[in-house]
Length: 289
Image 1: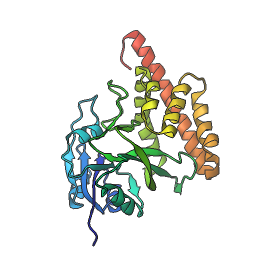
Image 2 (image 1 turned 180 degrees about the vertical axis):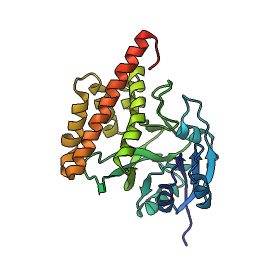
Image 3 (image 1 turned 90 degrees about the vertical axis):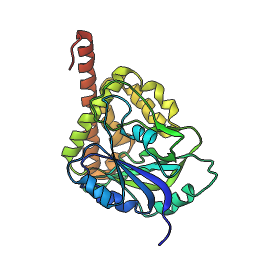
Image 4 (image 1 turned 30 degrees about the horizontal axis):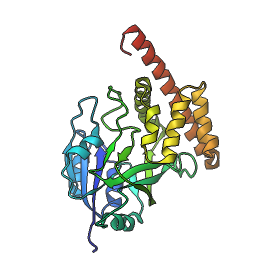
């Protein structure tokens, strides 16, 4: 058996027993796995320990830091390289060789890597809608932290939502990709995006989104955020979001699944708009929504 890859995997969880076996199998080659838990009650803790992961509990104070940044600041990582993997994500078999090459380099000139991921939705891999979807996940942990877009309470849970990692140094792109099983059914999509829209509305109200796109070290992701900030000034945002996913991203080539995916994102945008209006009215009246 070959030696383990010298990388620390960070997996934030809360009640992820249905996803963890697949997730753990995909990174069995990693030398260290940390699971940062939020008091799971579904057997996730035992499952993680049996897989050889180190389980740490996170107690959220309601605002900042959230789970991943807290972990980056406080966990005693064995290795310089850390890779952040959500429980509903899966690494493909070619990841081990690429990670081994990068993490074994004693003098790296590139200190962070973006990785692309594809979404499994309604029984089908989407090849156009939300693809590519880049996230900076592999980096020297001393040099990278998640951006702080707001310090207000966002009512979105204790984990980062749409924040990205910013590293102090040169970044690149991995050849390997991730599989993302984020939405096993429509109900999960609705539940997650109800929370995400809380975050979107509060960040929009706090007016920090527009100033952030230049710090992301990825032209594509920075442009996406710039377009999002611009859309906040435009009418018919739910329709524009639908057209962005369905036409601009060519979601129509994904068939019926691409249509439903785009339509649900239009609904998500409607929630963001409605909740932002609600927050603004509450702020003016001095009440709390």
